[in-house]
Image 1 (spheres, helix red, strand yellow):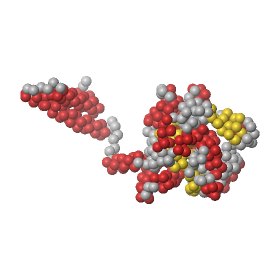
Image 2 (tube, rainbow, N blue to C red):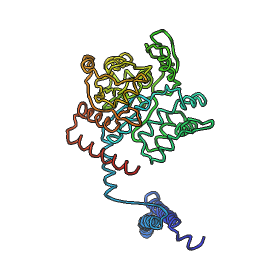
Image 3 (tube, rainbow, N blue to C red):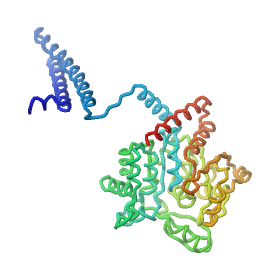
Length: 445
């Protein structure tokens, strides 16, 4: 090796690391001779003590010189380090505050759940998303059929919602192939499918992907069993498959009378049950009532654990009714269905939209057989449910969605006020830190 190569910063780091290892060996040798062999000769004792002191000195020099080499790398442009003590202090403070945030378990599936998670991660890092695995349509359905794996779509969306990733990475994972044999397939689904192939099971694959993407909180499938949805319509027809149920209900002009899962005794994940036990709040929805929320309650023990939990139970009401599932439903009808499948005590509070939407958007939805969910507060109170009203609707590309940031703010405020009895100063602190993180994220994008 040439002299100038040896003096390159990258090589110098390795050299000083080896120098540090040499110091550790000196200390180990000297300590062993003194403590184990118990050398009694004074001159030998002095020699081995000198070895220990030399070892400490060598390690000290190694650390100092390694740091100098790293700084040299930065100055020469090999790596980019930007150490701002003020920013670092703020980041540490924010992380410490989020770790102290309420323990929230969210249960559901579909785009509604992931939308809410995007806002919730700014208030607490103690989030567990329990996600349905009944999806059998689209790219998820194809992978489920071809590879025999659980559907990755809803889980992928939740992981990305909670992930701390660069915009390009999120865009890549959400990318859908436009043509060929992979047409309409999401790259994120393929990523999770590949992770499933190198993991012990689907749960392990989900945790590995979450680790790679630096997820805030935890995402878990409700069960690892090959769960399938089955619905009996009011006209007596039996429909199989999550994607087929609303379509057949519309086609046959018959509402869902009963929802079931196969296998009936599908076992939940232990992590899901543990999270429910330890939760400060359990949130159901938002999302399709019959095909995203209820399937989780049908998995063995899930409903029992929710009812027995000391957490407050909150339902996030959908803003619009859904053809084939909740056509003509009022907010109270949603609660009645939840109680039917989850039992009494499954919900204590409902957060519902009280605002209106533009006339042109309303007309567009009416043509598709959908309308605003009527907030019948009196009926909800008669069901023993406390109503929290807020203007949650947000129009995005002509579609009505929950305003994820405001919904999360209302949700966390409710949890702190109703369950944790935090003082107003603490709530304001959470809101302030949340706003600062959001602003920084927007700037980075």
